[in-house]
Length: 138
Length: 138
Image (cartoon, rainbow over all chains, first blue to last red; front, side):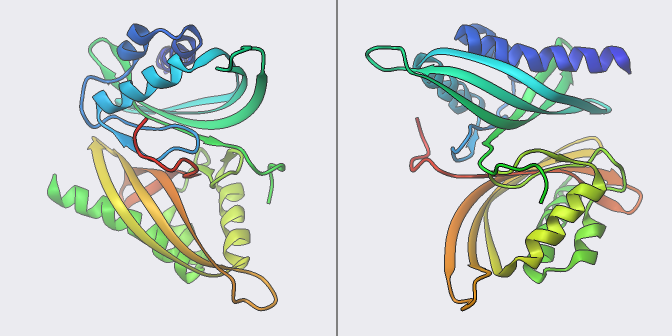
């Protein structure tokens, strides 16, 4: 299964690369071509449906001057044609302001679920949530 | 697939019923018996591993005087032996304080991924995140 895991991890990395580049076409290619895709951006409500999900990415990317992801703890588990990836997004970003100079760092944890299709692993669900608690253990 | 969807939605409801009852045994029975289970509580970092995940639930339930979930928008999609459930948790809770009287309401969106086992659908991943944004559409 090593090759499968590698392919899933590459598909997962592509999500963040597309976001970093602000590339709508790459973002569209990542998501599965079905209407039951689902996306939860950090702090956002649930978005369902390919058109709605892609629209949200377009808006977010249009409002992001600069963003860079350092992924840690990436783990992919495959069960037949479904892959569940969990990871930590360590984010360096510049928000859209007149000066364009304000950078922020943030930590988000994400679940990315992929389905195996004829053309590779496609994103079915993305769920990112802000890490608000300081410690890792209760 | 109607029966499968019903079974998945029942398994999903059982997660919240176990939490409402503060029942550690029911919570243990819900989670898959493997070590790659994964849990992200709202605002928390990523927890992996059955022991660590169940410990977090024990701590949370021990510190919750009262909690009630009103689930909305529950959707289950099944791909072979994996089911992805998304839902909104509308929460009424009482936090553990000396008076025990303070209630709070909150909204959380959740992804719950189940695997089909010989004994039914078992929870593989739970990811809950706080809804901080007011509107549903960008």
